[in-house]
Image (cartoon, rainbow, N blue to C red; front, side, top):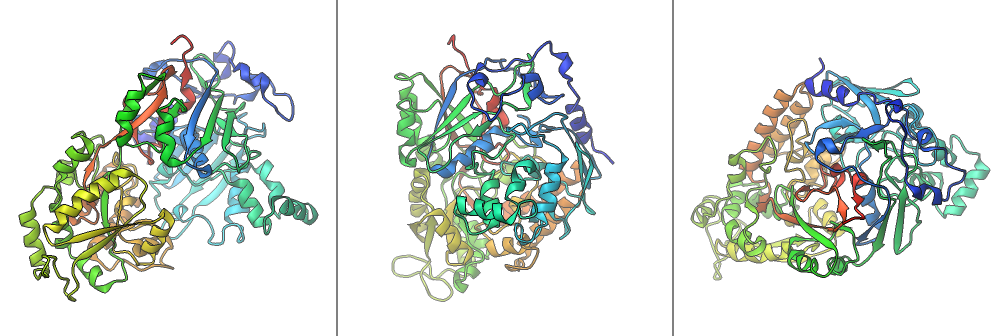
Length: 633
């Protein structure tokens, strides 16, 4: 049975024929672009039924073409932000976090098992090649099912109960994916910041695939790119998450024109982009985005001296006062958006650590609850966040329809007396001469907290927590290492506690997957081995041997088997109740504020927004292709 949300999705894909516009409008910049052959008129570059973005209906202003946005990035890898914020997806979220068609003209879902996508006739990749069902077939047949390109077969998140879907090409513009069991998070995966790429520009990539290229030409290409074999060649040339290949066609609003290494990456408008505004003006409004590589530590300072027109990365709340003062000297505006993480700073005990003594301590819920109760979140809020954050466990924000006070308040009050009682009950009553509690094996409760050291806020919060925990007999020491080293140590069981952020998606809806609350991936710092077990389908890692964690995974499976929103909502609440009551991660505050800097005459950015990776794609759901420069400001 088709649910209401799917019926609405079909409506959102209602066709808007080109003939409804007297003429389409394009940027003058098109005439200056260097292309292999002359570009056809704009009406021929657009799909026959482009996506029409009605800005006025959403309270924004239809704009004008032109201009360049300058942004600062902390390294060449950070060009990955462009496909995130361009946010061209088969289906994507709007600002109300509702799924709607984007690259596809429409879609249909039956029983959460059968997903049919209809493409836009005449839609083209940025090089002018057609975007058709063959681009999906290429990925399915020649990538996912080629043992050298995908050694483990199709991606794990396309498998339900260990089984992948049946893929069908119904015609040149229609594809279908069918699962035997429900897959209710398929659409949300496609709308995510880094979705599974179901389609790639087949016409371009076939030259790098052994099935389509001669041995002689392939050897020449391998030598030119200085890679080991055709597999490495194909992987390099097809990488779209980090778009380093300037020749790779894209469906995004802007195309990278710069090969690394470089100090500046130039992204230029896509002449075949599929969206127009209500006046028939092809988006994006802005012609170019320049990404200037800088030291991460200097980005806030450079932003404050007018070197960026749009900055959200490498800024933190601690930079706000400096940036706000810079408004008086430079034509810039500084706003504060709300971060959506379940906790801005989170202490994460490793329930899979190799240390037998600490592992037993962490698995006692009384210890986890005690450490949470020992934290004075109100003081952290006032001292670090000027009282503007919300004291909370690692839980959802009020902006989520699933929010409840009981989740926010779970073991998050300041009660050191109760904390001491719980630790005594957990068998940690003995102390050494310094007042530090002794573990059952006689070692003092000295905790090395591993930090990736990526922001000063973490350090400020840890300083306060160090004082709180020593009062209940736990002493912490902070060790800072690079992100990859910390993650490697966690997965190897060599760390007993890390510091990081809470759940990514603090504004979840019932139709979004609750996978963050259960062991699902080895990137989860509290249970990497259990997560690896789920991720590998049981071939690696270890099955959860803690009943509460196993229960969360079983609930996740029940969510995935659900067939309507009401069922999913009920399962979400069961999981949230268990997750927060068990204090698997120790949250501090959430709803903290994130500075966002923009040029004073840049239009259509909200003054207040929600900021985060998933599901927001940072600026993505606010549609940067609709940002424009007001030359009269």
